[in-house]
Length: 170
Ligand SMILES: Cc1cc2nc3c(=O)[nH]c(=O)nc-3n(C[C@H](O)[C@H](O)[C@H](O)COP(=O)(O)O)c2cc1C
Image (cartoon, rainbow, N blue to C red; front, side, top):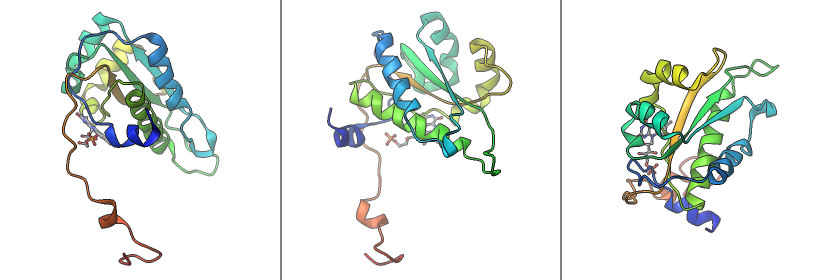
């Protein structure tokens, strides 16, 4: 898939076909996350690939977006400041998640950035995945073939939110 086609066709998918996802595909998606920018290149991210059907079923209650999904990638981040006292770990995790969603799309799969729903299930995920105490369970994405591609939600036209040289200059 061409780069801008992946950008333009990526959608948050919340219903998946049960068809398994090859490990090489999941690893390629993680590699796209690893390739994302990282503040001061601290590389604070870890990735848990879930492709065990029993484990998938146990974590499915975390979010409705996992419906039918055969696999998921859970993004962990070490909430550590840079040597200059800047906190970049949220941005680091976000950049990795966006790269993974685009990679999944480019490979003909789909995902969904699950973060809000995950907050109330951090204990369950920590227990099921054996996540050590120093790492935050930041977000996850299901990975699979979509049952259907959802309609594109409302977004502004780029011209509506673009300013040339000075705010308000169109
Ligand atoms: C920080 C963040 C948190 C999100 N959390 C959730 C979530 O918990 N559950 C969910 O179904 N979608 C979640 N989403 C997906 C958004 O709902 C989705 O991106 C938005 O509706 C736009 O749709 P699109 O991704 O298809 O363009 C989240 C997205 C972001 C960026």
